[in-house]
Image (cartoon, rainbow, N blue to C red; front, top):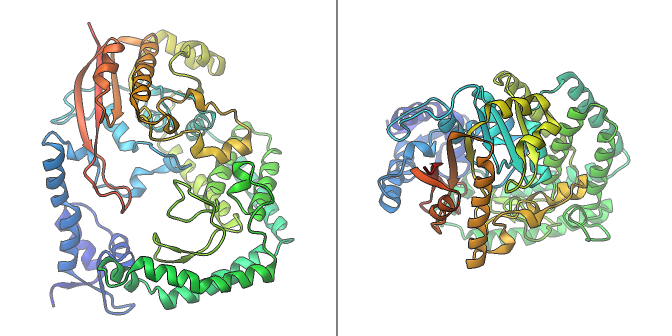
Length: 526
């Protein structure tokens, strides 16, 4: 019986086995999602140590050996950061708003910091240096530069991306922010008093809870699915159909309007009528805010909220397919789930989370300059544009010049960066500049798209050189499966002096293949 462990004992054993901290919550997660089997009842849950060993062998050292065999011995496994929890890779302001394709902050920190090892043998940046990210995205480089005592300039063609990045590094009056959050939350609750939607949703949740407890018991159901004892597709579809009459009856009883009368815009198509009304109500309240910084960060909270309230399944939240307006079987959660009919819960969750993250970052920030500008990195005059927004920072940049670049350009034919935030562009009225995106999804990955991408990235580097010190260091994160970066470097008058290959670990259960990306180190070609 010494192979049976309590959750606490399992966390201690796993920590010793893996040589890293494994909490009781980590073990509970494995039970809840069917990765390991629970033995015993509530209050006396036990775990078979052999079950844990099988799990960790599948996802631990054996995976590293397997990936090295497929990707090469030059794979720097330490850059996988596999020892980190999600809370570490999304720390403080890095999770103020979702964003596709961003790198984790620890990767930026590794190259900007004074850390050296067998792979990175030199220090390239120091405190007080200025770092450039010409594909700033959601501002990860800006935040990490701040933490390390460096200045940073970001450029992004998307106005909304620039807003996210600038909001992450801005300094706020927390008292004013909390006052406005409280005012708007109170107003939303009063707005909802005139609606029957909250009561409808409460009754629907009670019905779903009883149904799911009966037909999808936790964690037994997921454990059986993992071991092919239940055909998930067949069983899930049958139970989805079985619950639908209950849902339809409640919709009729409370006269809930599931769709809007028109579907001309993103906000029309992807939100129920009631949520669309809530969105507009809060947006109108935000317009009343006088403090510009407070107004911007609360706009980001609203955007984050409405993203979570789109009429889609949980599994398709990142990549939308078709609007979902009824209850459905959710493979992600292993039960019947529902669309969202009121966003108050998410609004309250994200307002509290945002305040907490901003306060935490305040304890780590340094007194340095960071700014993200909206523009085309192929042609932007950094000194001139920065001068329009931040005179002191522009003066420092002209005098000191930029030490180097750390950036992850868009991958060719992978993401439409404006479309991922279409709801925000619709609501806030930002001008979209899809035609200026480099390597967008809609242009594909054909020969012409790749040639255009190669030239565009080279143009960005050539333009950036005008503002860099002579002995610059440029680090570009890319999965260069088409081998374009040697040509890019040549066109930019640069040479690739080193390459750091890192494994990109599974982000979803569907993606288990060996995958790596390269951090290219470029310098001036003499």
